[in-house]
Length: 248
Image 1 (cartoon, rainbow, N blue to C red):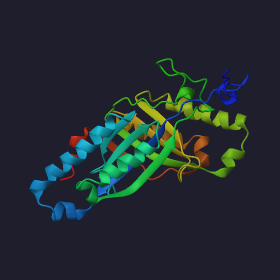
Image 2 (image 1 turned 60 degrees about the horizontal axis):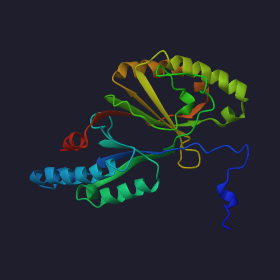
Image 3 (image 1 turned 180 degrees about the vertical axis):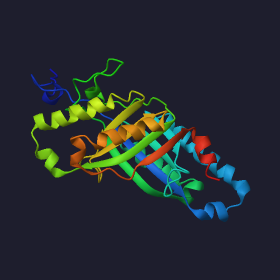
C-alpha cells in the first residue's frame, strides 16, 4: 500500500513558509554612438523591437513597469521595476534585452536585487486599507507618477541594539511616514543577495511630499544608524513605448 512521504506531511507546530517575491530595479543607459552613428530613421524600429520583447515579459511577471530617468540622472536614461516569483525571469529578460538591436547599445550602470519579507517592526501598524504593513510580502504598485528608489545599508551597531530599542526607533520612523499619506513605501530586503541590505522605493504623485518626508526622517533616531542610502533615483512613470521614445 502506498504511503505518503514524510516530507510531504507538515510537522505539528511547524510554521508555513511565507510566500515571497523577487524584485529587481534595473537602470539602463544608451551609449552615445546609438544617437550619433545609427541613422535617426532606424531609432523607432529599434525602440519598437525592444518594446515588443518587454511586452512578452510583462505577461509573465507580476510587475514590469518602465520609468524615465532622463533629465533626473546623468548616469541612467531609464529604469525597469521588475517583480517575479522566479529569479530566473530576470536572467531571461536581461538576455532577451541584450539580444535586441538597441540592447547592443545599452549599459547597466546600476542594478539592485531584493526580495519581499514580513517586517518584524510594523505588524501592529495598519494602513488606511486595513492591511497590516508587516504583511508586505506582495508588491502592489499604485501606479503613481513618480518613483523614488535608493539602496540602503545600516551601520552594524544597529543590529546589536535590543529589539525593544530598534522597535522604538522604528515606531518613530513609521509615525513620521504616516504624516505623508500621499507617499507609498515599498521596502525590500537584499541581505546576502546583493551589496546593499535594503532597497526602498517610494511612489507618489507629489515629489514635494517625498522631499519633506526625507527631511523629517533625517532627524529620527533610526536615521542615526544609516551607513549609506545613495544613489537616489527620481523616476518618471510612462509606458514602455513612451519611455523608449524619450531616448532619441
